Image (cartoon, rainbow, N blue to C red):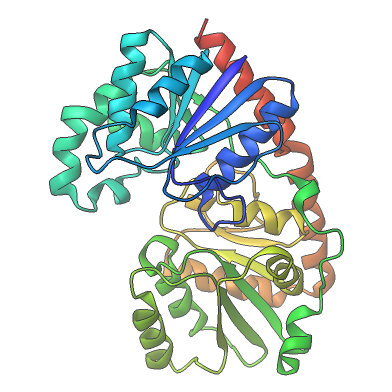
Length: 374
């Protein structure tokens, strides 16, 4: 097949942005399966290469509802059988879908969690009219809407087009072969002998449930525990998070490391005892898959476990995004000995290896393309 992906911004696999990771690895793996694949992006930055994939970037026009003519000429010249658009509430997607409809080229849309009710409530005074004037019409003209685990949110939004469920995957070959399980204790010797809980992701208190996590952490015996938060702050969240930590008087047991990338991120992951992801809403977070791949038990909210990949007390702990539920999950993981946590981690790794390899994910997406886009 000839598959074109369309994305706003360049496709960076090392970004904290899950959409970037999805497009990079999905297009790369589809190309590795001998399909002709291109990624067209609107970005002022030069494109990053993707193996066997044609990658092109175009400076966006000032009017977000207008597309660069060079982009449309190149896309038409490339003759895609299907165009895969990513994210929602993107004015350029509206313009592109109109052009594709005119050219009779089928398209697919992946919302990437953007239709979740908590997301659509943000700036609702803009999103509500946009929904009924544009977004819903665009989605219902799609050959199908792709769910990475957010099917309920897609259907609640009012989508009548077919919905295909294909989760995100993980490229195990992209993980370092020798992550350092002692990285954190080498960097901070005072952590030796303590149970290390780790969160990696955007430090958005509301979305990621970090306010709940801190409140729950303050209610357990933290004498032999530490909580490490890794990632970029979100809209001045540093002020709110540090205020919460100080008010709860847990500053000696909570460590902010800022954003990390590459091997250092995996060294930190390998150094923790339990990975925590208590988001109030989500799709299928890459950080959870990465933690599982490194054989770490995960304490996740049901929102961060939309496909039930983690079974409670098997690969980790599944909790509600509430303080009491988080407190119970943290307490359970403290009570278990290291051997039991390692056994959970091994089961988590086996789950990723058997169900979330990018080759299988990309092949399933190709099947959906062919089935609905004849």
